[in-house]
Image 1 (cartoon, helix red, strand yellow):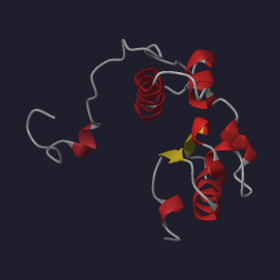
Image 2: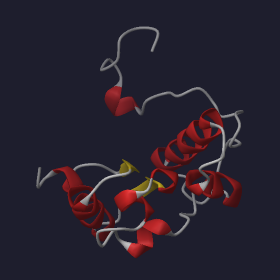
Image 3: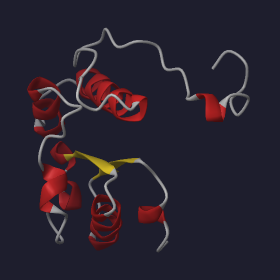
Image 4: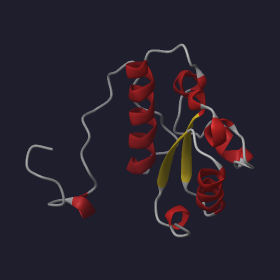
Length: 123
């Protein structure tokens, strides 16, 4: 469990307790992007010493996308689309240019070349 916060480039947190906060601190401390679904509460909303920097909007998220992550009244599909757009921007390496809209319009997911062949055909 100790290594989870040391592996990825982008982390999505949903609710969580002290363990999620610990992994988010490890990830954020090495520059990974943490996308907290603040609307779910717990660590993702800032409890358990969740890293304060991870609660700030990253450059790869529009203000509207970031607001959706904390809005408990927002439709789930709009929140999911916002998460997808933020993650796609983050993994594209173009973290200064948010893409897509929170309610859709994001390009279809294409895994980076290093993952080619890792997904079944048609994914």
